[in-house]
Length: 384
Picture: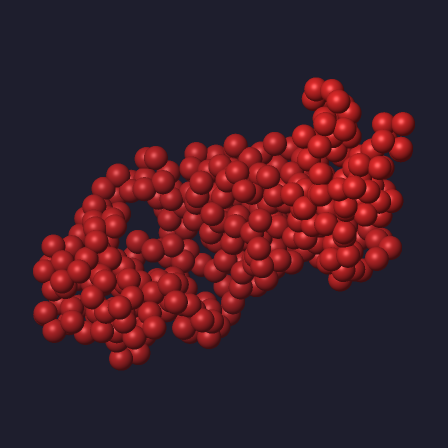
């Protein structure tokens, strides 16, 4: 277990004469009562000193003080206490300075609920009243909000994403700072925005997140339309579904390059959009054949989220696919070679049309998926 492995790592660092604590989201989630195995350790030991303590380490981000420790059976990230310089690229600090005190390290963190630490024995170190803000369900920047967002503009979207995940409100001065600096979000690397949206799509309150993107005017500096009303019924545990829904809501605007979407996200979203469009007229048997179950179910859910009536239930989709005579084109009993032999002619546009017609004939049970019967069908019905 990550927690136990991390405790052993902390203990060894302490035995070597240094300080080490749990930090960040794992402490926040421990207080909230939410499971979290993404365990981070911070220490007063410098990276070289951490590496000297353990036998097996990897330099995953040593320039920023992070060493991956593998000695305890689970990979544990150990990061030296640090302060950050300017973020001129709006992505990473130009330089970091390693420090020996936890207080300095916590001062650079984004929100009070993330600026807590916990010792190996369970003592909470809370210099910015993070526990109180969690009890009040408030997201508050550490220190001066504008300074935190000028350091890293992505923190503005992170505040909104946390609000959508936890159902918390954003404290007034923190919200005001986001509105003031909203324009700076356009300079943040879109891969980082993409990662935040992945988490927003699967949050408990995505409509709340969309509303805050509008209220803060961040939406004006991002590609796409963010209308909270469209998201009131939306709920998913799969980020792919979020991108597909966003694509449909934006009338299939090609934002994939802008948000650095993967090919998988792009293909899934486009297929869902096609299936959703066809659902408006009702799906035909070949739609159940050509589209994967997750594509059809997502298209169905989109109709539900948009309050559109569908004449069948989502559970019927799998049943309709299950009774298809064949599940893949490879299962069709004939090939293009068979058709050319029967027609005694070369291939061409007709061949693709004939194969498709044969597939439809099998799917609609006009003919059995049998080579001899398909040959008879070809001569008597299709070619004739």
